Structures are given as C-alpha cells and as structure tokens.
Image (tube, rainbow, N blue to C red; front, side, top):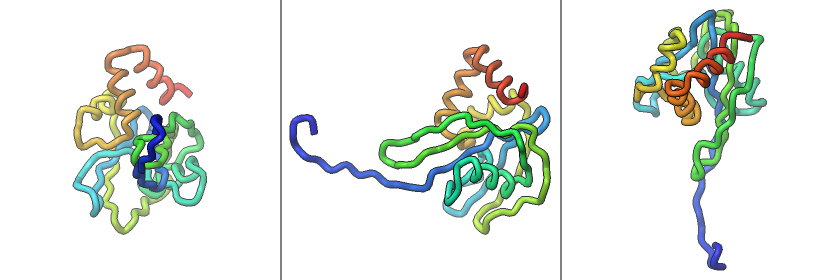
Length: 161
C-alpha cells in the first residue's frame, strides 16, 4: 500500500470474450438466447469465449456457429476491460455484408433465435434491461441518442464501407 502496509486484493480470471455487431443488408443481427446457467431469456449480440485462437478468428467462428452467417468484411471496434475484479478482455467487432451460408450449430446449452432489426431499433434496444451487451457499447449507444454526430459516424461505420 502507499503507506508501506501489505494488503491482499482478490481477482478472478476468466476467458476473454468476443461480441459481433453483424450487419445483414440494412439490418443488424441480434439474438434471443436462453442458457442453463443464466436467467433468461435475454437479448444479445453473437459472441462467446476466446478459447484457443486469436479474437477475430473466434468472432468469425461464433458468428457462423450461432447464426449461420459469415462475412469477409470485419473491423475491430473496441476492446474493453470490464472489471478490475474479474480479469478478462471483451473484444467487439463489426462484421459487414454478412451472408447466410450454413445452418447454425448450437452448443448443447444454447437455445438461440436470430432476428434482424434496423439501426433505430438497435439503438433503442439499449433501453431493454434484457439486452446484454458490453458496458462500453451500451454507453456509446446511449451517447448516440444525444449526439447526432456520433450516431452518424456509427451508422457510417456499419453501412458505408
């Protein structure tokens, strides 16, 4: 400590995770999920654990497995460190021009329904307490409702490339 004393601080470590903002035409892909260890159902973006590959490769795998969609147009949006007590990184990616290429392959503990929403609906989802996304993304979506320039920049990031 600053005064020279010693104190123990506890932290837990878990796998890093990925979340994907998947753009299909003029829509954004969201999911309604149920999982045994989580109170549900809840809404989310496609994503999951980073197990043994680079985060972008895991994001591509999760998008394909959970939705059946794939993309060749990816951009890293941000990386957040959500907590000082739980050690992990949360990588957020944008996948543009997603195409349906295969049937989803869910893990045994997943029930997932995929839906598409327009940009304005996506921004409003942040009001729904059942929409579970990284805190930094929640904060940014709320800011976009106040600051039109940030909203326009995000819209262009998703649709103009």
